[in-house]
Length: 129
Length: 433
Image (cartoon, rainbow over all chains, first blue to last red):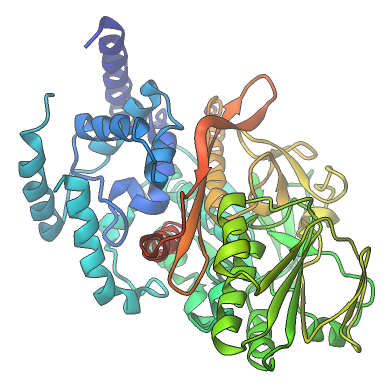
């Protein structure tokens, strides 16, 4: 990872830490970074990526996984709708979206959690990060 | 098999089992999946929303999800349920019923604590910050969101209710959609179905072309020799030109007759004749879609400051450029984005986020992004798709398409048709569940 990306990542971490501090203190906190951007996903993937009826469930994926998938989609030839969609966001925006979705929710239903776990097993071996 | 394929197969396998119960959001998702309203997070204010369509329902829901219980939200709507325009062309070929496209407002009230008020707005007082209803009551607000959708001009000759019943537009899903279905079924083999498309901007750019395809597909199977004659006020197909040109020239060859650049002068409902710049045309069924304008509440309250028809807005907040404190979202606003349900849902989220920030003394997000996505049936089991991403351009103060991130499907397919049903169900869940 280059220094620029590292800096961005720590900034994101900082704003999230500040956001949760604000909420705990019962004052109006800065909305979480990436929330509005990530809400572009909700029409098809459900609120905070937690869909049970639609396209791929995003909740439960790590930020690195979501980031990698979106990056891969951007360079696919003969794009499907999601591949085309991924081309609309900059690298920094994709990172914000991935970061928000990975933190927005950690609870999954048993059935979906099993699916995610099984699916992850088959794909993690291929991942470098 | 990669993970994405695994998920695709998994959800397709589940689709058959759940489709029936999902036609109208019949409670599949749990509260944890849908999200809950946080208790007072230090933001307070009163927001009134006028109109419970895709934009109005979504903004009400997200104001509560993102603003917490301190933000009170009242949604004023005259109907007891929303009838989806999306997929309503499938009522024409008998694949859906109008009731299968209806969404109650009960979830918005019970899950998110939105106060539902059934009624008609008679006036907005932008200085005193209140909305008057037909029953004499007043709703005070700190921020008002107006989302009435579109209204229609009346073609010369169709001024009477009787004439409009003979020549429905069926461009607001409901009674007219079913009427048009019945007219189609009443056609005899060899008779013609004429439809007109208004100049843009109108609601759902691919919609009329999609309707021509769905009707042609049905006629081909059920009324051999019948044709769909499309009279388009635009100089050419304005959405998904590849998919629809292919549909008209190849898939429905000989059944669809497409004429661009046609002006409708008048329509005579008693003789079922259209007077156009190309001459007179008589038909068995006429489906005339008139030019659009913002809903009445926008035009009656000084908000239609763009050509007297549409509401000018600042797309960082969707605040009216005519009246501070009033936001206009969805089809009634004049932006560079298409008028359609999917993008109205995203405009609503930007508006909700901006209002929550404004109520807590912050500035709106300076670089919002919206996405437009839709699927269009080409036949009873194939569909195409269209998508675009819009990003805020500070130089022009408008939402501009992101280069390289807009396009249409390479071709129609059965997979696209299946994805269309999934997309529809998730979009309606995000707006009404």
